[in-house]
Amino acid sequence: MKKILPFFSYLFHPIFIPLLGTVFYVLLEAKYFTLLQYLLLFLQIIIITFLLPIAFFYLLRTFGKIENVMLSGISQRKIPLLLQLMLFAVLIQKSITIDRFPSLYFFFLGGLLSTIFTFLLLYAKFKASIHMIGISSLTVFIIGLSIHNQINTINTVAFFVIMNGAVASSRLYMEAHSNKELLVGFLCGLIPQTALLYFWL
Image (cartoon, rainbow, N blue to C red):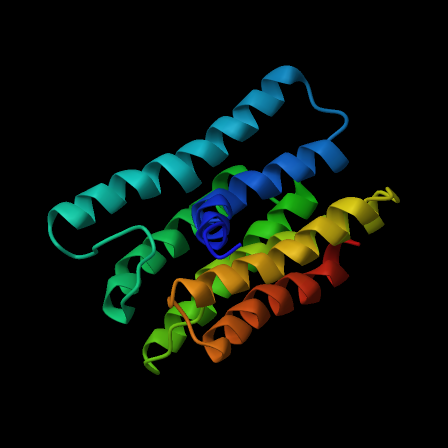
């Protein structure tokens, strides 16, 4: 089992969470879009939250600012988190707007708030788990979508609740975080998403 645990850190790496959230949005809510609208939505998400961060990652690694995709050091996290703040801000202002994709807008707004909290914690020399932020945010969003659309997703929700534990165990096994860092990361993802449910449920 211990040999399998690192797999969960890569499977639910934070860079995949925006795309996964969009996939569940399309599956559970976006029923009236055309194929072209689906393609444009996914294209925007892939470019802004996946391809651009990867390009910046290789650029930062070339200049010796970061060592690996797990961003193990506090100093290595500041530039990537600032980049994520800017990209999320652009996304919710220009693409995933509240009038076009209301629930998805609040998912990304919650992600923006979580990123702000995580960035501010760096100045307190505290490294909250970004993996836990991502998986807990996604779990709350899926629960919100199922309630909003009155769809029974109990098996999916149960799976992601288990995945929260699997990701936490993975980060502990890889000695990437302490229990406290995992808990704070979990809360940083959970609280904004839960609070924002009030505006779209």
